[in-house]
Length: 485
Image (cartoon, rainbow, N blue to C red; front, side):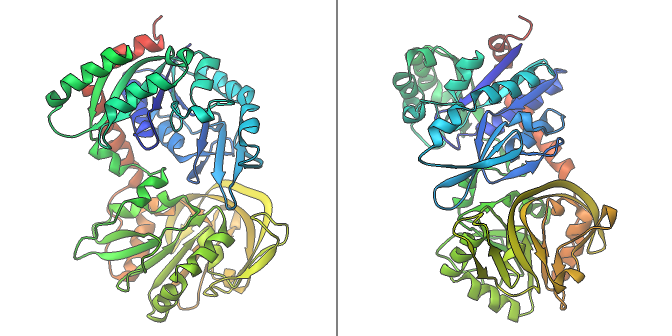
């Protein structure tokens, strides 16, 4: 069966976006395509059709293929927690934790399950597009590798290497990769792509051909900076390190960047609204006093992130914001932080115990090992919503008698304080509803809800696919992948 793997010379070179672009380009050609990432490390996740969870990037790539997201598309997901540990998700289900001491041995043992998922996907489609993780040049991690060359060689999948010219040193990064990896690994690489190019590509012709000569790999294209990618959900936390550039005349929505922030793509639909500006507040900076809405995001380690929030002094900013009567929204872990107390009697996140919350909602949370994963539909703030739950723990208390959302089957979600300016919810993805955005933003005097987020994302996928196809030799890639062979 046909397959092609895109690996990168490093993290954040654009692998996820180019896989999505290639998936949509091939789907638009009439091929049945499926995305696959053997191992992902991310706290941005999505609930799958089979009731599991997977990396957000692979969920987006599934949409690019016009396919339903399934846990087979990302069989191993590592979600970083506190204390140098990661929650291990296999085939969409929690299987415990991995620490730095047992990481290599444990992941290597997962290869059989990775290959099982890959083979199931192969049986469903014409071609599988595989995304690597990090870089094959990280030779210190080669033993037990299931994310890059370990998988490529086990499954006999040819590789295209991506270099990021925007960060500089792209010639050295590609040629250097060829020099440091094992000859057997280098033999799996059949070509390379240059990504994120700005300016006149003719100025890079000599360098492009020199890479081809020195590496022995086919030159398959110079991909320009894909501006439409900014309209896609963000998975990589690297984007959070980039400074915000608030524009005048917009009301600020501020979100503190917590150490274990998760599912921060929940905020992406708000970027469609011309009346607001999203400001991600990094450590070391206060939440701006002129902020209209503070959003406390999801967290992979709620108690540790609450301690970090207090260490930054953000709790003082939040209380001052509350005294001004302004709006505060907590999502998932952020919702738990807004209550009076968070208890962890079984030591789910670390040492057993409990901590005092911010006390802005009359609720308390008890963490538990069972993880709730499900898609939901209902109404919130009088508007239709669809989203998903992905959390460990139960939140109870008088505050839940004023729920945020009424769900199908008479279930309720979240809490709203008596004044209506503090909202907590376990639902992810609710801002994709334009009606919900309109209802929320009306509380700060902004007319919102004009555009449908899913439609906008789908259009962005078509845009990046068209741009990619105009600059990459897709026919050569298909020959390398074995389509029609």
